[in-house]
Amino acid sequence: MQIDHSSNKPLHLQAEEILRRLIESEEYKNGKLLPNEVELSEQLKISRNTLRQAINTLVFEGLLTRKQGVGTKVSRKSIVGGVQNWLSFSQEMRMLGISIRNFELHVSYKRPTDEIANFFNISKDGARCVVMERVRGKQEYPFVYFISYFNPRIPITGEEDFTRPLYELMEKDFGIVVKTSKEEISARLAGDFIAEKLEIKPDDPILIRKRFVYDIKGVPVEYNIGYYRADSFTYTIEASRNI
Image (cartoon, rainbow, N blue to C red):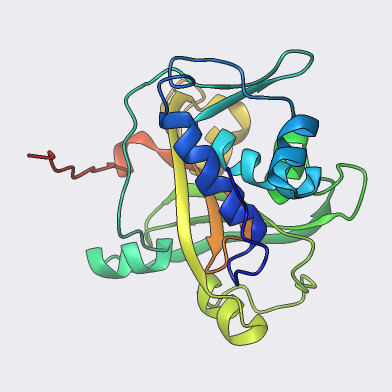
């Protein structure tokens, strides 16, 4: 396990690659605890913050599990679906020929939760995140409620024109090119709050789609949660066998 400090590749990405190889090794792949962060950072000759950034990425992918007071271990294998070429919401709707209407748009500053702070590798009690909330849908009715938290290191002020496509805005205004999206899909009943947003009943089903979005350097830029009407969202996965 060696980090090349003379390489142009960021240290956290090199650490992530090393951890991925470790995860696949016979010694660790069945759920063994990783060395503690102090020991591992000393072995790799990087800071604990840099190591934690790499670990956070693998935790969000479901490859590692971290438990306070116990440590970090390799997750046992489960069925995971992925998409190679992901699209923004605006691109998805454009491809489907759906004309999108914004029913609500709110921008605010909020403290991140523990999960969001870990994703951005920031202190929970530090800088507030710019948060954008949107209810979007067809002309006739809304079908998704989005909440986007942005990395406080991005100079977004909240005064931007968020009616523009989001990733186009980030690239043209801030030079941030979004490349990777890692996703989680789950389901539940809507509940009162989401039901009011989506004009459905509280006991109607919804699908929840979390997106962890990174730029071309692997830096996390957006934590996004979308709450979809179950009758308006289908998630399709295409996979190929290795033969």
